[in-house]
Image (cartoon, rainbow, N blue to C red; front, side):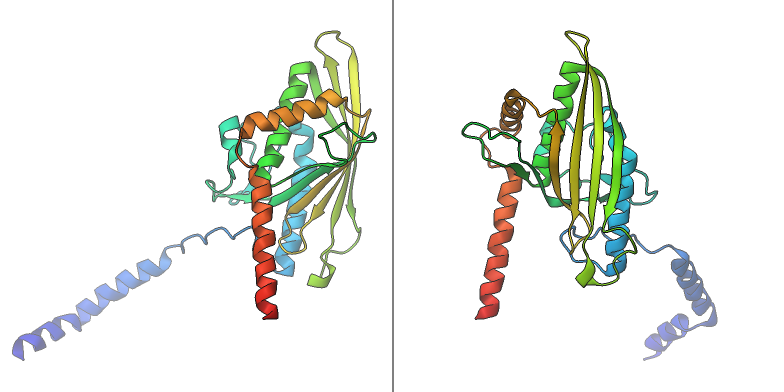
Length: 272
């Protein structure tokens, strides 16, 4: 008992309490650890949804004109808010989600983004009426193929924004029932053919659609390309994607099937 009393006296001695208070005070002065990045599939509050859509719109307006120099910019630095102007994504990395290994980056594109384009003239088999890819890896791969192909064929490439309009215009959404936002973008691409030296120009009209759940870009519709690309351009894109992914299943399509199955099972469970 005497031994235990001496131990208790040491612990509760005024000097010991002072040391403990000093340690606790310094511990409380340390900044809290950074919160882990949110799953991009999670629903967000109305205020966070407005921030995300505004952030994506600002990023596109600033970085689309730099497409031929830096490639497609898909994220921002979580600390500074600056666009992540990293070097173009190498081919081996394009098979994976590049943001999974970079928790310090804030994405603006949904992992399940869909890119679609309907050519003005029906393409021969096996091409469908509307060309589309689903999932961020395929979206990034398509972007890389277009950029590298144009660089191989043309010099002095530049992109100039002609139209950049948010729809619907007006005040930001204030309710989860009013989370509808689109971005209408038109731009012109200029370049000089490497073989002939002749000047070339294309005008592209697109619509970006934001997810009402996450505020990330969920769909990219290419409405028109003037003049329309030649058939060889589509065939080259298909061969390029096949080269990137080989005989593997396209990761975007696999993700979409998984999501549909998961959501269908959830509905069936609810009915039961």
